[in-house]
Length: 341
Ligand SMILES: Cc1cc2nc3c(=O)[nH]c(=O)nc-3n(C[C@H](O)[C@H](O)[C@H](O)COP(=O)(O)O)c2cc1C
Image (cartoon, rainbow, N blue to C red):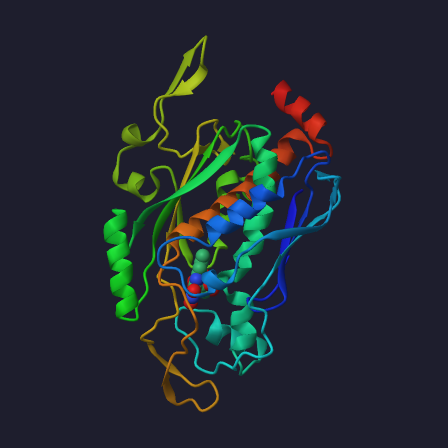
């Protein structure tokens, strides 16, 4: 229903997001999109690239007088650091990155051809498209946020910063865990009737597609496996004022592949950044001789930024499920369907 694609390389001219399926009549404030793009660039432990880029969006299609008209929306973010053809070739694959498998798969010896697209710079396009979906969801009170749970096992921000400083000093990198919340998600998005309609499966796919995300859990998640059913499942109550309600939300807002009207709570695990200042051993793809892995300008940790990207992927996925349930063409019609329940 809602289709999303991106294009662009890390040091190419620009990044493009193409979003098709948003209804007509949605008022788009570009400042909302730019604010999300700025949030993606923040967080302690980011690399030099984030100082160069000041991401802002230009909309190339799909709007008239600031409103969507139902046609595909093209969003463009220009790269200030546009120099793809001047950058040196890369022959020393980085463990943990797409370099080696990408080069062998596509037949490159210069892994620049791989890393330019595999780079998480692409996620700026996702954040722009996601921001547009957030604007749509906001019309219905759906609010998506994220927070860092821990970096390298540490939760206190001051201690996190110290760990990041120490990692930077020793040429190392860190990963962590973040949490995404979505409030006011109506009951019944997604479905139990088929595997690819299950909302949790769709969200997990969207979130696992973010580079470096290696795990996704809902509600209690993996911790539920060590508990009894009676401690885990959210008992059902009813009152005339509240209707059906729960006192707990261990399911994280999804049961049977459908939103259950409770807030969505999703945690994602991000592995440590692959590019190390003190590189791991690697092999020159041409000579097959032992060499240190290549060093590219890089983040030390990017858990906060990954949370912002996850918000965007959640917004895209929820918008898709929302449009499926309430109709697609015209925002007024969708609002009527939403009100009707
Ligand atoms: C916000 C964000 C920033 C990232 N920054 C870097 C980086 O600066 N250097 C790097 O090597 N990897 C970085 N990564 C991770 C790589 O893009 C990722 O590990 C790589 O594409 C391989 O994909 P995989 O980890 O999913 O297997 C970043 C990921 C995210 C989400």
